[in-house]
Length: 242
Image 1 (cartoon, rainbow, N blue to C red):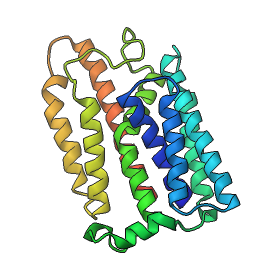
Image 2 (cartoon, rainbow, N blue to C red; image 1 turned 180 degrees about the vertical axis):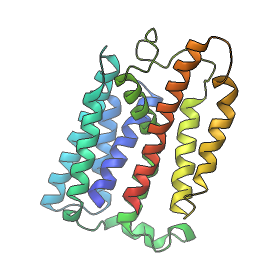
Image 3 (cartoon, helix red, strand yellow; image 1 turned 90 degrees about the horizontal axis):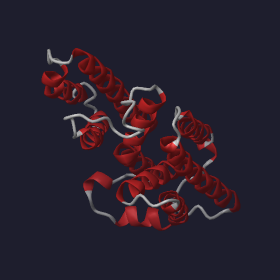
């Protein structure tokens, strides 16, 4: 599972870098470099492992480039979504071929005295780090790509978020995904429904207004589709971890 965890970390770092500094080619290069460094720190230094790390780095580069193209392209953004799904499927299929992670990362985990990291293997640590990192900026990117590909975004927004008073979605999304994933890993899958219900209750007044019904219908569709995709990212990450 070490290769899968490193791939997720590369995706997460790429999108986080893009969220902090929107410079062309920089985010994907940083993500690919971090993936390579993490792999080496995990002791993946054999010929096969180095080849796998190079493939992961190229995949991370491809992800970043296709995401940029997808948001700038006027049509649907199915290409980056396809890259993400195919890369994830191949990584899961090849996870049995990946060796156990070790190296400096494993030695550091053995020396850490935090209870939450006790008995956590290097492979498990990489996968958890990648899964939680995916909930941050990458989850938002996937939601926006789906919204754009389905034509749910406002036609005048030119690929950006539609003008609305609901401004906290980009922060609320990562928070709710992290809560859902953390609760699920803690064995409280049912408790995660509280987060889902709370989000719906908080936005119910806006979505049930009697004024401008056409805009309300569009906002409801946008809210529901975006929310379901966001929750799917969290639950899909949980499936990878169990």
